[in-house]
Image (cartoon, rainbow, N blue to C red; front, side, top):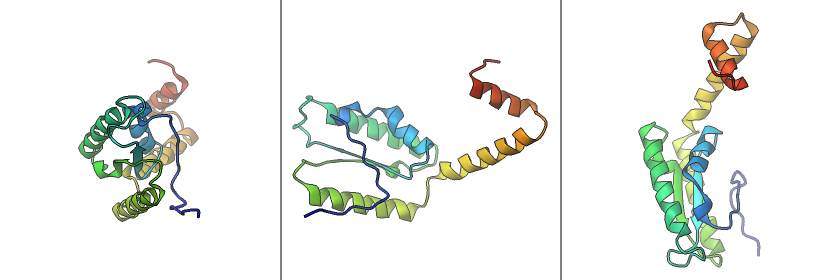
Length: 143
């Protein structure tokens, strides 16, 4: 029996959730993810000793940061499940997907679209100081 989870969920497999760094969580939102769910092994059952505990602390830090920048910390969650809990995995993912749909799209998507449009306008018009700084930054040139 194959269990179905929402098709918009992208699974990224890691050997241990301890490999998930704060920057990975935040970069997901920068790249347009509406939500992130970290699923690790049961607490006390990590084969790498405490990877899932480190991951939980990083998720909590990401939640604080996302709340502080008004994106919403509830968009990133962590759950502990064993590999034999596939039905629970589907339930967790489906519920989180629905919750995130209710919240609406990632606010950074709209901001990113505006910046891209402004950048396209700047590239088609004579260079202003701000567009030059943006282009210089993209090229890795320090001003």
